[in-house]
Image (cartoon, rainbow, N blue to C red; front, side, top):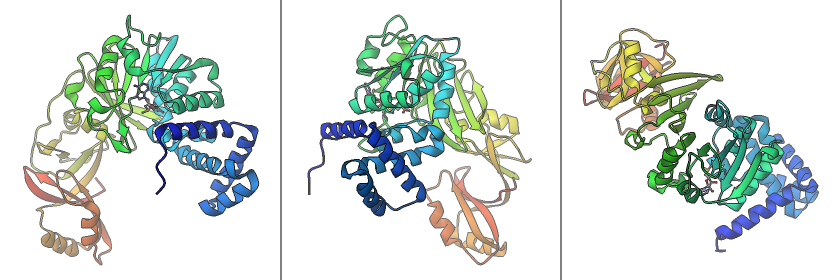
Length: 413
Ligand SMILES: C[S@@+](CC[C@H](N)C(=O)[O-])C[C@H]1O[C@@H](n2cnc3c(N)ncnc32)[C@H](O)[C@@H]1O
């Protein structure tokens, strides 16, 4: 088996490819590759055609980048057509719309310059430059620096971006007078994956938690992207923690430095370009618990992660079905944007045989299984419960007052 390329070799190869793709011949090869991707041509015939048309050297890199651009397009829009990416930097990239929102809040009131500490392919750098700041983009990875510079040029903001080689750990350790890397504001988005695996321990992020805490302490106008699962106990005093969801999925969590903190915790729900927010200065504590009633409500993950379920419960007149499970229940229906609601038709102890019989009796042949606090595998349970009936139902497999329970629900909540 051939030896895997060393990181240095891979970086050198990446830099050489980037350089080639930036030439007029590279641009033409990229246009041809993009057309083949758009036509849906399979990889082998596409590479065969590209090799014949643009040469062996450009064919592979052009095809790879054209595929990455197509993958980026749903989130990056038209920018994707000109961006330079690697699969790693695309995987690490945040959503440009959210980067723009962050940039706007960070720079509100005007900031001359801002440091992007760990720029990767430059999503935050571009957003900050577009918001009007002079950006010092720092990365210790030469390929990331080259990508940031190429993307700043491709998107017409190069005059506002200076890319530098630096170690964010050292720069933050040297921060003083509210400034880092010479800037009075900073964005830090630590790498939270290593070797393709998510690093759950913030001390193992790069830069690590100690740098995150130091930045928030020393540079009051700063924002740090953290893992949504961050333990609330880690959030330093005076710092705002914000959890952001889009279309019902949590997409990022942010820690806002003292100068930008407006509250203790915030859940933000982004929908159709608008943002709904729920805030609390301090931990509002748990919602009360009570028996299952006519409706079940599943809070948005930003509400759950931010620990603000009790605020939504109060708004809905709802209670938790179990002190350890984030499902709410109330008598009445709700059109609150903070929950998905279901009508509860049956509540029964978890028992596969009885459940199957009940579904048959109700004419239910298809179920969507949701679970919380249960080890079951939703898709496999849905398969096991498939039957001849024409009706469908939502099954919520969970715990109620500690007991494994199934709620047979209808979406018309
Ligand atoms: C998660 S990525 C940033 C993604 C970027 N904000 C975006 O949305 O596209 C983290 C970046 O930090 C860089 N990095 C990690 N540790 C660093 C350090 N100690 N100094 C400088 N850069 C570092 C990595 O090379 C990587 O490019």
